[in-house]
Every structure is written in C-alpha cells, then in structure tokens.
Amino acid sequence: MSITIEIKNTSITPRNITAKQGPRAGQTFQLLEQEAYAHTFDANGVKHPYPTRIILTLEQGQQPYSAGFYTLAPNSFYTDRFQKLVLGKPQLLPMQQPHAKSVQAAA
Image 1 (cartoon, one colour):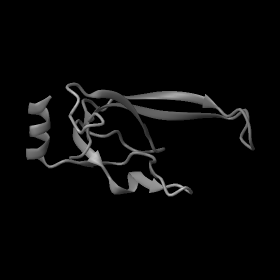
Image 2 (tube, helix red, strand yellow):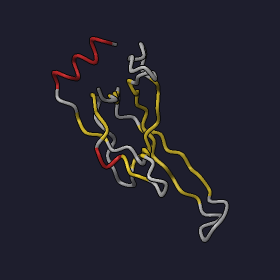
Image 3 (cartoon, one colour):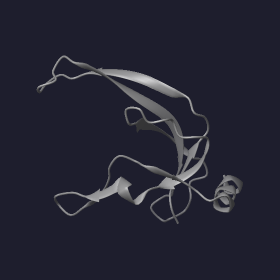
Image 4 (tube, one colour):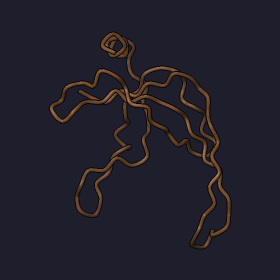
C-alpha cells in the first residue's frame, strides 16, 4: 500500500512571497506551484473514495511533472531531531502503468 499522486496537467502557478525577517527581509521570491491529487487512506488503511487536492512546490528551474501517476520517492522522507519520520519536500517517481491503471479503476 502506498500513496499515489496524480498529476492531471502541466500547468504551473507562480506565487510571490516577501521575506519578513532574517538577512533576506524585504526581498521577494517567486515559487512555482503545480496542482496534484493524493490518493490517500484513513487511519484504518481504507482508501478514501476521492483523492485530495494538494499543491507541489517545484524547485527553481524544475520542469512541471507530466500528467500521470506517481509515488513518493524515498528521499521525500527524513527523520527529525526527535527520531520522528517526517515528509520533507515531496519528490515524485513515475508509477508503472499496470499499477496506475488499477488506481484509476478504483477511483
């Protein structure tokens, strides 16, 4: 069982933010965001009937993800200073087609 991320299109949305404190206070930065849908499960491991809309932030210069089905790469996770497993910046890996089709059919 794994979380499946679905990308429907390659549209990206720019978002400008201004740093409020620190050495870059007052500087404006542009983030590029891409809409995606996460096929998730409840606390009992039962798949939710509908995917949840999520927003992915792309790295500077990164091309948008192509339409299709993805899973989270292992480097998307790390352990924090309290030895808790944490989702960091999501990195997506394309899923193999047969599995992606089964997710589509279940949706």
